[in-house]
Image (tube, rainbow, N blue to C red; front, side):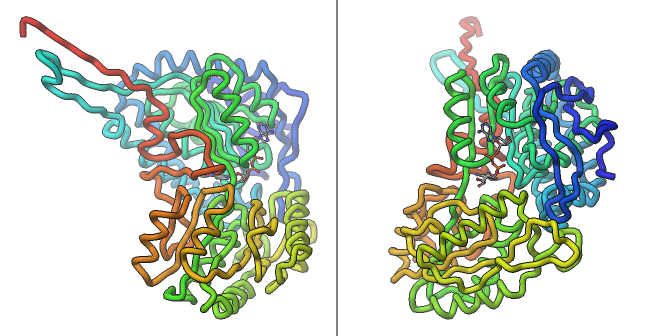
Length: 493
Ligand code: NAD
């Protein structure tokens, strides 16, 4: 039993279009596989151009009515959705573990972050308001309103299949738009379950829809008429492609890309605390997080001490199945991805980094078909190494030393990415320096994973983000609405 009510008799994940569940009509598809057990959970058939066209047309029709409904009416389904998500939290978390591989606690945490966005979107009546000014000019009052635009699309990655759709969906619909989700084809079961829950709310048919598919489906959506804007989260090359293609077709676009996150540890930091947080951030979700700590740059006076502490904490991590109690690190998403991460480890060794803790031989009894890799710590990493510059997306942490905080900041800024960074320090002056100088969208001070709450925006800099308005919070309201100014004069008044 996979845990979906709408799976077809052949075990296929269906599209959710116009309020009904329909089989995608494309020729391609992919199996959804439990990465710990190798069990095939479902088949994901990909959508054809006709499937995409049908969803767009249904979305346009739904928008005509939905956009005129009072805002109070538009948020009621979000309150219902929040209740359903709470009620089904553990069931969703279990499905997430089976389809993705992360631990049950991580899955619950992910869903909690998703629910936060639904909660924030329930405040749209206040958030969507805009300004007005009496006597802006002689006999003229001016006011600004925000209007929904039409059909929006979100294209999401495999690593947070429950949370990332919710960075967008609640805001898009509460502001009065209709919304199409194209989830990752690698783990589409939780997105499908989210649609089943939304189907139980009072949302009119066609306001929220889901089309399954791969890159062809994405490219059809990007080029299609009738879509106003595109939200994307995924790897940098695809983010850049989505950004350029969407813009070329006259669409609004926000495209979040990959990451290479540096943390800085100064000699005034609480080193034990920093080591705990660094390891936690680096290996959670097997390192498959865009906010994971990838490289720690440590002031040389405390480098050896910090390295020993990190190795100690890394050695306590238990690799296993996410549904088994005591597991800290689950499997990687696919055998191909596991091999890719192993290749990075080999490259690190060939390029001269020192293996301080080797996770390559990790074996998990009873799960011989799983894509497991244990935590790996590299020392003596230098900026010219591949493992210092490229996104690995696995449980691999690199350690570097720097003479002082200035050099550490320079090293951290030398990557192409700018998603997140952290600083562990006891010095306010160093913290202020990092705030001013680190080129990242999310910066943590004495916090391992710099993840903003839903009422703040989420987005990176440099090659980690293409666009201007980010996900979540107020940025989402701006992305999903257009502004109009009323300039009124009533000479008799
Ligand atoms: P991905 O880029 O492979 O896929 C993301 C989405 O794009 C999927 O829905 C997929 O179907 C589609 N896609 C894939 N290749 C495509 C192509 N050539 N043309 C058009 N569409 C295509 O990413 P992923 O492997 O699913 O996710 C991991 C990546 O996402 C990592 O790089 C990670 O850093 C990034 N990520 C970033 C953030 C952020 O906030 N910046 C958050 C989560 C994940």
